[in-house]
Amino acid sequence: MEYKHTQKGYMLGGSLIGMAAILAGISAHIGWKPASIVVEIVLLGTAVLFYSLTVSVTGGELVIRFGPGLIRKRIPLSRIRDARIVRNPWYYGWGIHLTPHGWLYNVSGLAAVEVDYISGGRFRIGTDDPKGLLQAIKERSTA
Image 1 (cartoon, rainbow, N blue to C red):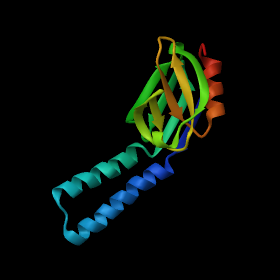
Image 2 (image 1 turned 135 degrees about the horizontal axis):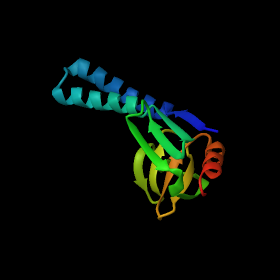
Image 3 (image 1 turned 180 degrees about the vertical axis):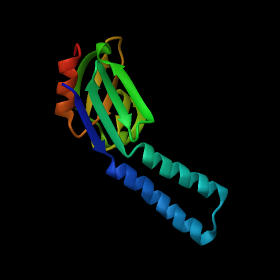
Image 4 (image 1 turned 90 degrees about the vertical axis):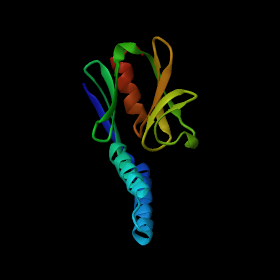
């Protein structure tokens, strides 16, 4: 049985689009500059790349995919030793970045599943379905 869940990043996407709208308003008023065009492209591009997070557990892999799938990570289930539900502090934020608990992949909320590798190290996946994701990982891996 396959597990697949998509979480929308409404706050992340809305924040990026909001900043782009404010910049566009300012630039329209004072005149467009090359730097403001570049920042506008970066803001809107980031919104497209990170508007959602899809996590699937299928075919012997845990797959984490942001937005349309240009940014993704594949982890063989055979590399997973253990997993558990955790809560991220609010200041861990959104996106992909290193935390004291390893890499974090998140688009919204504080709930996450922390995954330990057999070889050491760990990472977290932000999700609004921590129980479902944890169950899928535990049923299909050595965790």
